[in-house]
Image (cartoon, rainbow, N blue to C red; front, side, top):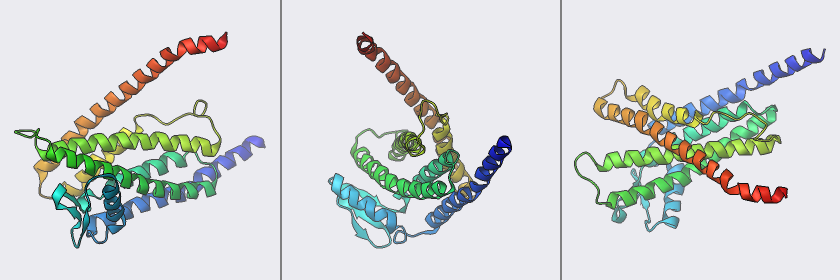
Length: 264
């Protein structure tokens, strides 16, 4: 009797996840379609706060240019649709939504978390995109270019490193938040694989452009972009995981004398 009730509860929970998951997919598709067709004026909902934050935190002061976005030509900055960061927002929202729906048991909590994921991805994207534009400002003035080292390639590498690293931070953060919300312990409750953000990023950064541009012109640029993502992203990820584990080991060894003192 009890086992039958437990099975029915689990079946109900699995069924109840279908509608929030479908809503998340439709939201991602709607954002992608809107971004692919929108003009600079239609993307003002994300370009304007990015330009404002950039003006607060950097010497640049982008001003609105109709049909273009926000520009500060003195600093060589144009906050245009290509720099909106909507693709990163879609990745962050999808990662948070799908990874967390599996852990939430209440139907109301699933819908609340979807709203939190969307709002969090939006705010996080504005912050990270501002950092990326500032890095672009610095790199634009750097005298490191020549031959194979072009502005476009350095800009792409910097974007991969920043977006991949910050997506991992976002992944860790919302996992902690879910544990707090559910009242579970990260040490006891099974966590998600650490490689999940890498796969999610590579799907968004390589899979989506491949699907969009496979039958269009510009194949050489597409091939270079795909190769860069497929090679550099795993390398950056591996180095990040290795450094993180080394820091954890170093912290454990550094805390051993303190732990032994407490036991006394």
